[in-house]
Length: 95
Length: 95
Image 1 (cartoon, rainbow over the protein chains, first blue to last red):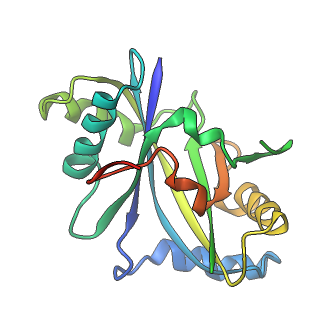
Image 2 (image 1 turned 135 degrees about the vertical axis):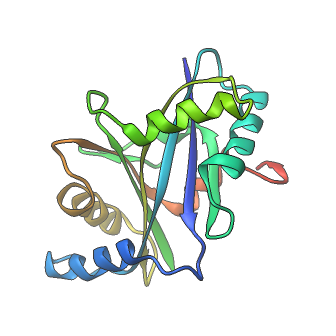
Image 3 (image 1 turned 90 degrees about the horizontal axis):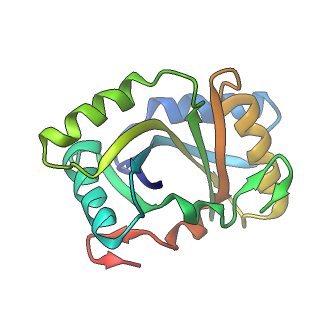
């Protein structure tokens, strides 16, 4: 069974109060490395078979028509979830 | 300026009403490929310099302590945003 990841972020010119709340809280917890935070959405779409180019194209269309509001949001990523492993760090370290 | 992506998903055993709403709406719009949808969060943390291993480790710690609720959510990905390009499809096609 395959899985497609669709990611949506608020457009840069859109206010993001959730991101602002996080960026205010980070230094209070000792995280001083981060100068800005934006919060968006991650969707995981399951498919019965493999993640083919057709499935990715359908996910891209769904991302634009249903999963995002194009007035205030950008679709920043549509990808096979299998590609997520690259560069991901877990509790055990960098994969 | 670098950017770290932190992604958080509801744990598999947690009900996800937003995902359920999306999976109900997809076939009505003609998307019959998808059998399940889960909705989570994507955070983009900006750093002034480069995304070093220390920055990723701090982001991982922030992900667990502030950006997710470990009772109901899993941190599924902490990565340099630069790695997002791989496998991403845009309006122009697969990158």
